[in-house]
Length: 126
Ligand code: HEM
Image (cartoon, rainbow, N blue to C red; front, side, top):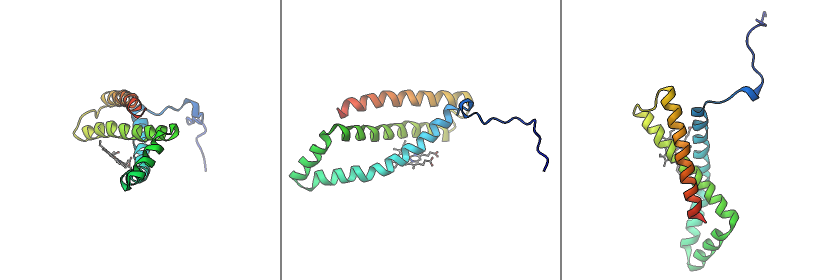
């Protein structure tokens, strides 16, 4: 088979950049999967806290751990990101931010809104 040797080839991964809209989309899927797994943890915690007064104290004790707070903060980050970018997605379904420029801008704004909510949620968790 004859291969055109002069065709452009780029195997230098360092020079390949995903557009911000692609990153927003991939993270949206990842945050959805994280939340799906998190529902099991949160339901277990809720069940434990509602089972009895001792169960409530057990759940409260668990929540006192720095490591658990970090995980809860991570779950909240996934939820906040998924919600903000999900709302952007629904707006795109309604016909907004469909052009390259507005799409890039709305992805950027979504990241900024998520970052602000992320900091606020950290203050609430701690
Ligand atoms: C526990 C709650 C939730 C879970 C587990 C969840 C999970 C997921 C998953 C796994 C996807 C598929 C992503 C993909 O195929 O790329 C998805 C898509 C989506 N989610 Fe959620 N989600 C939750 C809550 C929400 C909320 C609160 C919103 C509201 C803003 C939302 C908005 C969306 C939208 C608009 C899509 C479609 C995105 C697309 O078509 O690419 N989700 N969700």
